[in-house]
Image 1: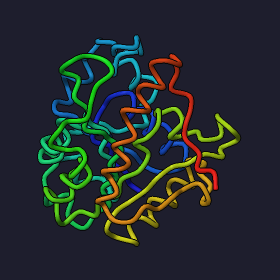
Image 2: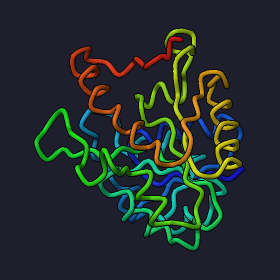
Image 3: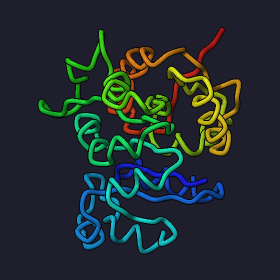
Image 4: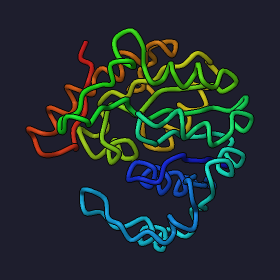
Length: 230
C-alpha cells in the first residue's frame, strides 16, 4: 500500500519508519523538498536534523505536500495542529478526495509556553478532527493515536505488554476498519482499539491532552498511556 505522511517532524518520521517496516511504501510531504533535504537543524529535543534522518532512511520518499497527497492511498496528518488545515490545503483537496485521512495531531496553543493549552476555537464544542473533516468533506477522516507519545504509537508493547487504550473515531466505518488493520501492523490488539463513534468524539480525544501533558512534564517521560478498567 502507498501511504503518505504530511509533516516531517519526529511523529512523521517515527510513523514513516514503522510503516515501511510493515511492508508499505511511504512518502513524506513537506513545503520545500530541497530546503528540507538541506536542513541541518535539530529539533527542540536534540534529535538529528531531517537531512541526517533521511540519510539513514533513504527508502522513505520525500515530496511536496501536493505530491504526497497524490501519492498516498492513506494519508496521515502529522503536522502541528494549529497549522494542520493549511498544510492539508497545500496537499490539494482533490488529492484527498475519497481517501482515508488519519489525523494524529492535536490543536495545541504554545503561545504561553509549556505546558500548552488547547486552542479555544478547537476545544470543548469543536475539535481539530471536525475542522479537518469540514475543510475536506470528500476525505474520510479518522482520528487515532493522538493521545500518546509517538514511541508508543508504533510500539504499544513497550509498556504493559501492549495492554492499554488507543481510541479511534470517524464518520466512515470502512475507513476505520482500514485504519484498525494498519494499527494491527503497529502491534495494537483489537481489544485495545476503542471505537468512540463519529468524528465529534475527537473533542474528547483531544481533550485528554492537557492531562497527558501534565503527566509527561511531572514524570519527565512520554512512555506511558491510559488503560480502561471495567
